[in-house]
Image (cartoon, rainbow, N blue to C red; front, top):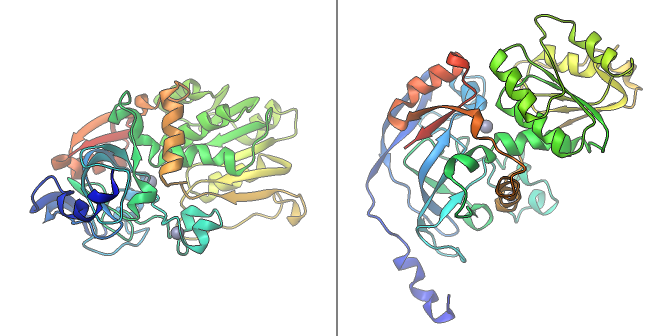
Length: 367
Ligand SMILES: [Zn+2]
Ligand SMILES: [Zn+2]
């Protein structure tokens, strides 16, 4: 781009007319509907993308049930792949029509939290999570991307939408469990629950160099997938005493890293009990109600265990790195997209996903 072209840029950087679009709107607990809403317009520093593929997250189910509060009228969804439709003033290095992935977390890149490296907590508690939380989300035909310069990750031509959509949230979150735990080469790991995030946590432990990966899951399809993602052993918690089995598998010591990937008191406690002294509990679950720490497995508070949590790492550099893992065949998450629905049927898809019908892991939603 030449400097001389700059003054006209804002005026010509929109490829389509405005109007209304279809979007999934949250009205209250267990009350969502696809309805027409205005197509967003990009102001300074923002972009609008035409969403080509998105999905439904377990966190969206928490919102639907009223367990995580958002304002009525909000468009849900935080896992977008799309094509740049409009670029607001101040965005450079992008063109309308380019394919992009946007992380679930869209940090500003400029505030105290971001510049301290705490991107997900941008601007305040859980503040990096904006789309489908405090701003309209991705389960729509178009999405307004805030802080677009920091959050539009160009998709390499050779990668399909299906290959990258799960990087926006579940892969970034799942992999982060081992990263935040500072998992070392040769560590033993147990991952509690093999939903989409747990499966990605299993793969993340493998990528980080764990020596033994123990997954906990009862559902047969998820157990199979856990093995494909790198689990050496899958323990069915409905058939065996998981904690006792983990002790057996680790010479009575417990694991170096226990990953909680469900968000319940029971799995949190089992993760804690399965830890070796000075081990790390890496918690990914979103908890509701109350979470308490039992004293005995916490070794009365003097066992040198660490409890760490991670909100999905976002921003375009994180997305670029994850896409490089896919492009170089280190990561393939397409099997996790077990079902597909058009946006028009997304309310049905929520029900299907919530009831875990037909062994569903993730649903692809096509606007
Ligand atoms: Zn999510
Ligand atoms: Zn920030």
